[in-house]
Image 1 (cartoon, one colour):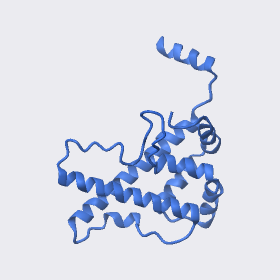
Image 2: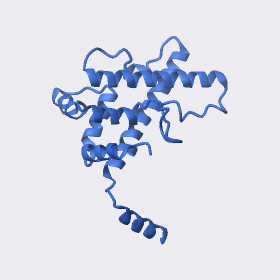
Image 3: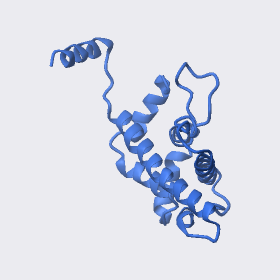
Amino acid sequence: MRWSDHELGLIKQTFAEQEELLILVRKFLLQGDMTEAEMKYLKSFTSSPEILAILKKAINPQLDKQAAPFQSVDLFSSMDLNPTPVDHAFRVLKARELAANYLSQQFSFLEHGEGKPLIKFDELIIPSDDEDETYIGVIARNFLLSHIDSQLFNSIQIIAGTPDETPEQQKKRLTQDSNK
């Protein structure tokens, strides 16, 4: 399983019924304007190395070569470029690389709290004289929007809201579900 029992417990403990916190994480990752109070609230959670590691694992996963079979995930692992023409595939790879660098930048800032972003989210869609650069920026931006939301609200929030079950409760629920 991608998440350890300890990580699942931390996700539930930290993010259960905390949609506002997930929205704040999203706002930070998308470089939204944040008040001092919002940043302080966010830091109260992300100052925990374990919580920061969970967010990184969900949103900016690094390839774990020791992971269980079929559990190795990074930002490139879900890309299916087989039917894609090489010139387009290259741009898509460059866009994903830009997105990965952007997420690393944001997590570094969250962890260390210093510096100014080199990659600015809102500038990813500003047309430039270089068509490839513009295209890559737009693809990266759109990937970031869907990926961040998916990981925060389709992964972390769902895990956080899933009740703990004993093996007996799980067996009973699965039996009931299969009888429907």
